[in-house]
Length: 298
Length: 282
Image (cartoon, rainbow over all chains, first blue to last red; front, side, top):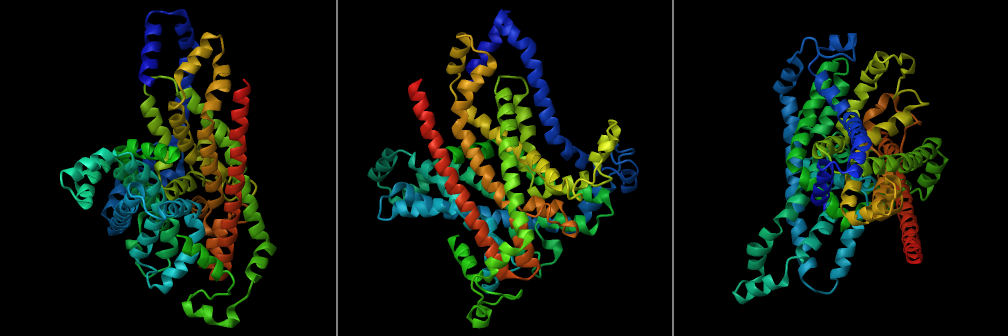
């Protein structure tokens, strides 16, 4: 649809169609202006933080709004050579990877029977999973922490990973079930005629076909876990784990409180902490947006 | 998932020590019935926190919604560099709330970038202590939240606009409708389902708000003017060492969210029916 309309308007403009040109004359620059303003507002603060990391603290204090003069790389170099930053990154990777793996494996295991088998209580199971959306993490976090103390998981990575998986599952199942349902029954029939078992069908046909869906839920779980703060705050910050091994969001807040006088270093630490999310987002942008659309439509 | 909420309900009837032990629940001395709930509703901080949550909820709906719809309608036309602009608009949403919050905290310090910018463009008189002044802290917080989440709303609306058939708008234009009329009577009504879903997500988000407040308004200057139910819950339940009381707050937060969600569903459902009838009449 977008492509068609593009062609139409483009042609109208090229041919000098009066109506088309009139719209171009006042509308287009205005729209560009708005778009640029919105984009600048969105990205400006991020750029300030990143560029600020290239300045010395004395320079920032003297002139908070200026550009780096000269550009110094010390802050970034310092952060990148501390084991603390890498410890934070490693912790975040462990948490996010563990959560993603758990969500994808458990998600497809739960979604597969709900989507493709008819059995008693199937609807009820689906309803329970969707009802999970009604129980936000914020509400559950505190009692969960108390429960984790009883289970001796308080202060451990596992204590963050297991609840993260549990709270990512409802969205996962809501996205995956329609996805798996859309795979035609004929494929399954054909496969069974060719002598494949149900398990074989799952491994050889369903799994490869549902890869796009799995990637979407995986990306969502990864981003959610990577950005998560409340659960690590409750479970890890009060535990015995040294702060060198706290996940990134926790580590950054801790660093900024500890070195609040050294603005340059804090800006550098914060911008370096942004980078993984930004890179990951650029790589998976289509998936994230697609996942949102899917979640909304589903 | 449901278990923690049930547990919260159980814990909320007890006066639990900071070093929680499962055995504490067996101690009849610790059972306090509804005392935690009564205490919550008699605490001005908590009442204020509920108020703050609802202020943010309403502001989100009446300010972020129109901004998002407006920008999405404008950006929905074919233009060069649209993909790049979309990407840039989406950046704040992708950053962790904590990292975005910290960045803003640095920018909004009395000696930070925002005040410097105001000075530079000759508006030095508008300089503020943005996050520490109780009169404006909530507004500042809301501005940051808008920055963070309006991109998400815009992308959501743009996605919704993909489902609005272009032919209808074209037909209206042939019939002589202006751009605004086309948007008002055709595009926006057809976008309504997306708007309703966004509003729902936004409301729930406003009620559960935690990270941004916790990070930007540092514990040292934490204050009633920006306290939310969630920050109050964590403060009391974890850091002030009163898990039982904190659990009671969690239960209240849950019920408020639930009531809002249910009311909204009824309200939105009725809106849908009304829309259907009006469309039928036309």
